[in-house]
Image 1 (cartoon, rainbow, N blue to C red):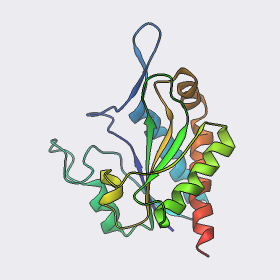
Image 2: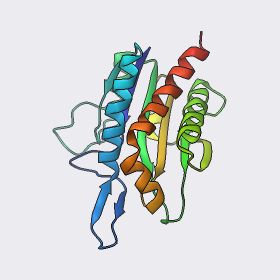
Image 3: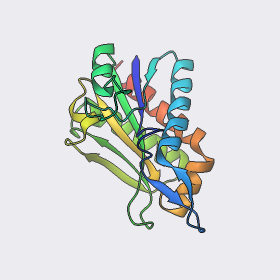
Image 4: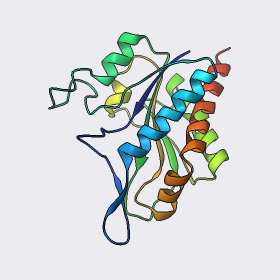
Length: 189
């Protein structure tokens, strides 16, 4: 199985959501968390025999203002012939919301099935609040990919408890995402 992994946001141009320490400084950036989890997901999946490609960029579908981002993530995944596409993110809201959700283009689809497997693995392994699988057809990485695609909102980075989980249990999150992908792969057999 060919798995395209897209850690959300961009290390240089778009950090995404952040966690702010009590002294007002940023102590955790979404782009860094997503990069760390994405690299581990790739490692786990390659150990399981999957072929993986990883790209973190603000150019999702020819929408970057930066000339040094010539490769569009969705087009690259399509051209590579990925079997599945997984974008990894951290959620943010009001510092109170918590939990995990996985977003797909359409719930009753292969992408929806992939989302269910990943959601189940994360919630069961880490005990996060189960926010469910959600349809989000307007998301660029879901509407411009040709293969089953999901966007994983691992936890709320602006919530202190979830931020602690993101900072200390990223390896477990990565393993759960990888297991969800391989569970999906096995369901096709």
